[in-house]
Image (cartoon, rainbow, N blue to C red):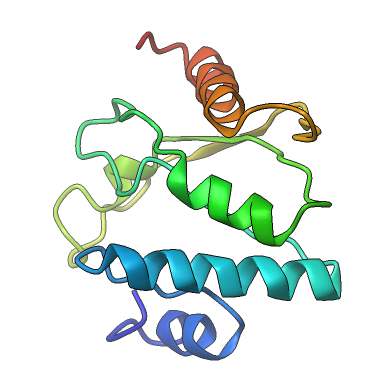
Length: 139
């Protein structure tokens, strides 16, 4: 997403985002670590998508814990706020162009979680389950 999308790519590249190359896991971990230090230092927030990629059919994929672990190690004061996004997969069903018109997307902000003292795998599973419940999906 850091290339070829007018306005979005520019903001991702110059706005402090962690641009990840899915084919380079070590680069991804380093970028997420830098993002974590950046948000900890400046008391900012960050979004992370532990599914790894968009769903093509609306069914959630299993969450991965490595990115969350890296982010929380670099930003120990962070609070996790799960966000359920429903309908986004329909927006790009036909690819980037043409983008589907009239798609309704619903965002639901769930209860925050203080991650202190919770194992990362447990935290990620709890978050995944909260989002599944909000979307009314089973594992």
